[in-house]
Image (cartoon, rainbow, N blue to C red; front, top):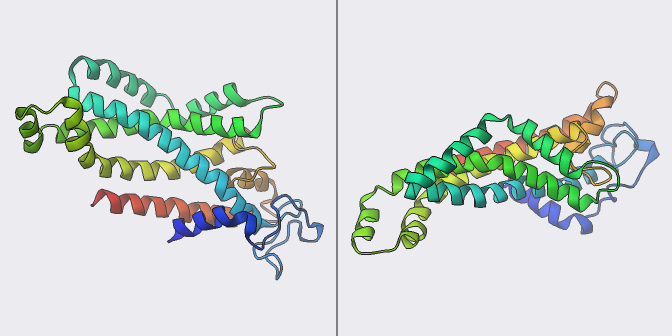
Length: 259
């Protein structure tokens, strides 16, 4: 319900009765909730409710986009190595172990800094680079989970029966193994969405996440951290939304894994 509400608000943001996220109201700068502004204003007087709703768009694009990228590539590598094993597994799995050994946040920070830093970088390119950087980081984790489950299911009786009947390997992978591996993949992927959203916030603290004036939960928190003493609501309200979203994604992942 929470995730659905956020998704609807993000989609309907242009038609909702809220001010634009960049409109400034000097009278509410650094002030808390009031009658006309339910969540108050930020450091320069922009409506916090509007910025959080519009920030949902960027944060969801980063979270779901990065994990979708990692799920496709990591899932494909995991299925191939878990089913065929042998030489393919001996090459791909050590590479994934190497990527897992590198601090993931440092790797994402380095990729985004190299690919989309400096003046004059288009916002769409920076957003794509953030998605790409976090997506690359998620590949080895999703690949290892998929590989472990593919190895288990590829030894089940119905898979062996399909082999004995002459079914081709790719048909067995997509018709027999993949449907049983998907719940575990989706469970980890949903958790990964929450991690990617939080990671984008960390990148914003270093100035390489989604850049202003485009709001995201990460850069709202990063921009408001300097006013914590006088205006804690800027960080607190955004952090509550972020917390509830990550908790909802974690809970949903647990439910999916039990199906």
